[in-house]
Structures are given as structure tokens and as C-alpha cells.
Length: 87
Length: 337
Image (cartoon, rainbow over the protein chains, first blue to last red):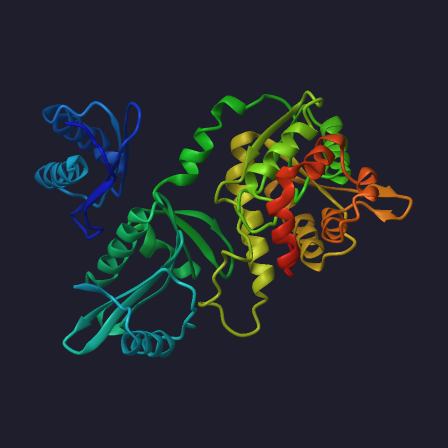
């Protein structure tokens, strides 16, 4: 799918994350997290997997995480992508 | 649930709530939101452009999720309005509360901390990786409204004292000459100087216009704090990235604000290991050269003396038809800039 407009999902609450996506040339994933030191690689792996599953190859993806678990990361990113892909 | 507070009674209630909690209600916001529990307002927050302000949670409920809810809502509204980075000025004691929400501290002062959500500073700095140079580097930060022979003199003098000179042109639009014009006139005006590198300040020059004061009380000198925070941000985050070891600025005979700013730089920059170098202004036979004098002459349609004040590149622009909208703004504008 293609990101055609700006969209966001999620909250700043503990154990949640906010995802911001917008159209951009190339694919960039920026991760900020309160547990970045320990878990950035795992958060990134989860995000990359969701992007690949949706065939996203272009866009700016920014994530600010407060210790969300994998399923929350998947759900929030998927929600943001679906909002960003709607006409 | 966070709702927008847009009608008069809601706004009145928010004002009373903010004032009860020791802050000042400031008009001039884009969004004002709050959370009600029953009929009671228990949290509020506002956004003005890319700045979050007037964030208050009722004291007995501060351990819960309300603060995050309000900030989430405002960040979302800011994002929808086109701001990928949002700033908050707060008391230093609250900095960690924002850091827990993934805000990062940009600069801290004894009375004020500035934090950012969205990683904009890092992104802005890394967009300039290609401009990094080894050696002894200096900087000037200028508004150039418009670029004069005075600016040119400062740049020439400074560029002779360093290997590389970074010229930061203030991006913020609070001047009669728009940023794009100011930037281009600097670019054209310094083209023949080989060791200068031109860039803009993005959102990272704190001006008195963007600096909110609602949380500062009493005898604080607001202007002083704003300047000191701006200098701290430059000295602690921007200068180290570019390897800048001295900052140059012109003597200021007219404007008290700029003069105070210069004094603050002389006092604070050395604390961060940066030399503050004041360069004496260039003078013509009838006084020093300044952009405000150029604007005065333009306002009075007195173009002849401009030759003495601006380089040929700026003069060509001032004589062109492109300058018309600026002149119109200049005649309406009674402000300082």
C-alpha cells in the first residue's frame, strides 16, 4: 500500500505508543522510546515486519514509544497506515 | 475524554482553572482543550503554533493519565496542523515529566527548561552533516532585514579569523523582508567569500515572539530569561555539532534588546567554552550602518543614500519591482522589525 496522506494513531500513555506517518520519498523509520536503549532493535524489527506485510516502501514513519508490547506496536502502526492510505 | 474548549463559558472556566493553579491565561492560542469529570474541569492545555502551553492538571489527579491524554491530544492537533515538532517551555522541575512522554530537553536555564517532542533538532542538525568542516570554526547569527554593508563587514571580519564561518540566518518570519528574500540577499552578498557556509536557524532561535511567559511570575526579567535560554540552546546543542568555538556579533548602538543580548552572550558563551567576539560596526560619514536605517530610508522613498549602506546585490533588489510587497508592509508596520 501507499501512504498518500499524513496520519497518526496511538497515545502518549504508558505502555502505548504514538505513530506518525506521512508521504515521503524513500522509507525512513525514526524511533524514540523511553526504553530505546534496551529495545530499539526489537521495536524496529516489529515495525519493519508490519511495513513489509503491508508492502509499504515509501514514507516517513515516526514512533514515540512508552514501553508498548509487540501487539500494541503492530496495531497502532497498522491503524496509522490504514488512515494514511485512505482516499 | 479530551474536548475542545471553544465556547465562551468553557474558555472562562479554563481561564479560572489556569489562574487558580498559579499560571497566567494567555490569549493567542490555536487550540484550547480540556478534560471534564462530571461537571468539573480537571485538566487543560493549549497549543499556539508549534508551542504547547498552559498545561494544568488538577493537583489531586496528577498521578493519573490526564496529563498524557491532554498532551496526546495537543500533539495530534499540532501534527494535523503541519507541525512535526512541538515545543514546551516549562519550569525546570517539570522537565522529567515531559521527558517521560518522549520529549527531549533542548536547553535548560535556572528558571526555564525548553523541551521538544518529535526529534526536530536532531533531524535539523543531521540535514547539515554535509556542511561539517574541520578546523577553527566561527558563527554569526543574523536576521539581515535586509543584508547591509554592516552585515558584510561583520562577515568579512569574522571570516578572516576562522577557517570556516557559519552564517545562520534567522528563519522566523517576524520581519518585513521575508525569510526567502533575506536568505537570498545574504547568499548573494557573501558569494565571493570562500570560507563561509550559509544555513538557517529553523525553529532553534528563540525569539521574544515565540517565548511564552504564562508560567513566570513577578520580578523575573522575561526578556533576559528568553535571551539566556536562546544562548544556552545555541551553545550547548548547535555549536558543538558544528564545532563552533567563537561567535561574532556587531556592536549595537541603538537597540536596547540587541545590546542586552550582546551582553548576555559575553557573559554566557564563555561558560560553554565559546568565545564571544564583538566586532565594531562599520560607519559611514553620517553614522553607523544599520538595517533599520535602510528600512527608514525605504519608507521615505529616499533611495539615494542606500548606496552607502548596502552592497550592490541588495541594492539591485531594492531597486527592482520585486520589493513592492515589502514596501507596502514597511509602510503599514510600526513595529521594531
